Image 1 (cartoon, rainbow, N blue to C red):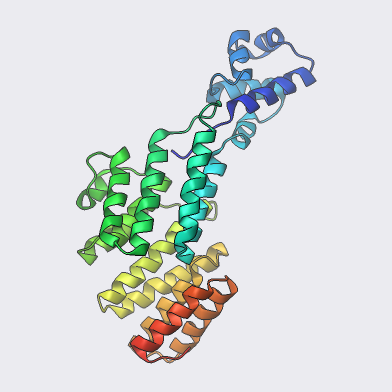
Image 2 (image 1 turned 45 degrees about the vertical axis):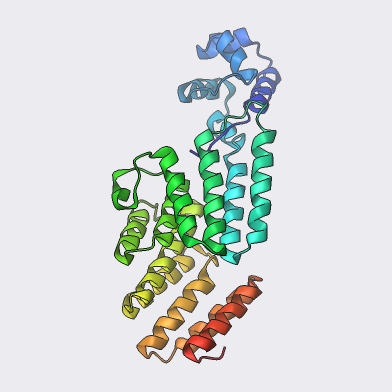
Length: 310
């Protein structure tokens, strides 16, 4: 799991809370039932406190210490790297990807001697994911697939695309599984089944994490693209519209330009007159998002492939 805690800083904060209340460790032992030795170890950052321990201390300190501990989680810091990876994929920025790899290595190495617990499997998976994205978006999608496949084998040694539904996946692993589907050479039907599997296990309410929302939008985009390749333009349009509805539901602009482009192409191939409006909106949104290079690429491909000038 992408989760770690700065236990030393949390312990110092807990010690300050206790002293501000005028309590000794022995006082807390009498009030909460937690031994003074256990409290000492927590305050020194030597252990992650158990759930029930934090409940007892919360009653004693009259403060929600579960929420306090969460604020000392470096998962948010780790997810910043995840977010940067999503941005790199969105903008197809390979230079930024190289910098992300250096920054991530520096972050992990810089935390090696402090009391921050980082799951080594997650670190390895993230590095493999970076390598896979670099290969996939530069010149070698097949090599990218091999990296994505290897990343999932870190936590699921028996993983194979054909047995995708035999395992349970954490949120970040679901993102890797999506890339497995996207980079899978054949068949397209298996790609779509993996994507729909990822979709099924996402939270669909407004309390979903931002990364679950991003993932849902990406799935709709890739489903639309796959149906486009299969010449099933009705389903391509259907999934593009579902993705756009998802963006509206969650107030997201993420991938909205991409989805509008897929919608416009599907409308054009189905003979729906509103196609030009959809394509022009896609370009405008990409420009607003400073994805100018991608917008120009879309305009060039659209003119060369379909004779449409945007």
